[in-house]
Length: 279
Image (cartoon, rainbow, N blue to C red):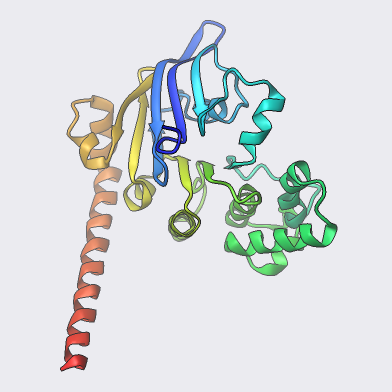
């Protein structure tokens, strides 16, 4: 079952004093998908992610990652699972006193202390370029980077251990539309080429329409629905309809339809040209 669902959450309860953030929350994440996670402010999207990766101990419930219990495991027992995922936190969460390359090396040194300095530098350089940054970015400090470059540097660090799972917390927040679209495309390409499963928290409707295979909606302290956007629109939940059919939702839907039409037209022209060439 862990092969089909690398993440399984059952009956999750997250409570801070009298404030209940999650109650009876269930969620399955399928292998190889990009799952978008959405919800209003205060619904606990980041808290859910932190619970899954072991940074937030829930009050009750069960979380399994690759068939291993996260909620019952001791810190030492989680190490073998943690090296199989990478995390891009909001804003990148880079160490300001380390260069980008040194930031990427942090998880490598933690899990593979036997690696030589030369190997560490080589791996870090590769991950920096894999994230779409220029090679010389490895020697720069976070303060020398733009917001978009910081996101990519954080992504490079998240990819350091060749993870199977990638957690992205608001990866396009604060980026201009062009930068956000490029980051979306990079995420999709990495998912396809590296065989990643991606857990993606976002408010960006363009991201949801463009790259997410399914979307999980947090409301009423739980996951109230999960599915494709078309499947979500078929539900009668008020927040879901307000979110996806509001002005921004309609704009994102129109943009996606326009892009699909452009793609079909391009393929059609290519097919016509190949037929003419063959004739």
